[in-house]
Image (cartoon, rainbow, N blue to C red; front, side):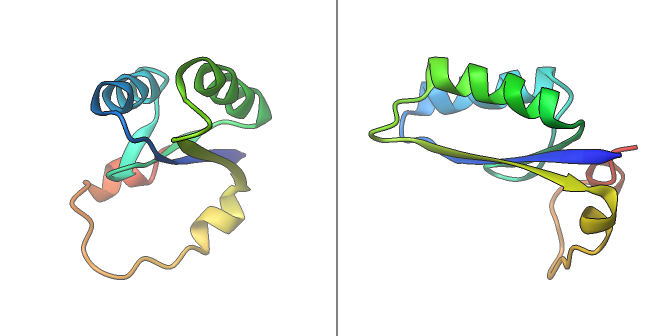
Length: 92
C-alpha cells in the first residue's frame, strides 16, 4: 500500500481554505497546518495535481505531492507532540 503526502504554501487565505476543504473531502488527514496524508497511490496524486493546477497560481503558490510506501511512512521520525490525534495520522 502507499500513501500520498501533500504539502503546500498558498498565499491567499480563501484559496488555502478551498484546498484544505477539498483535501479533507478526498479523505486526507491533516498532520500539520499545510501538510496532509491519505492512503492512495499515483491515481490519487494525479487527482490532487489536476485540482491544484486549476486552483493554484504558480507565481505565488507551491504544492508538493509525494507518494510513499507504507514502509517509508512507518520509518518516518516524528519529533515533538502533534496536535493531531495519532489515530488520524495512522490512516488505515
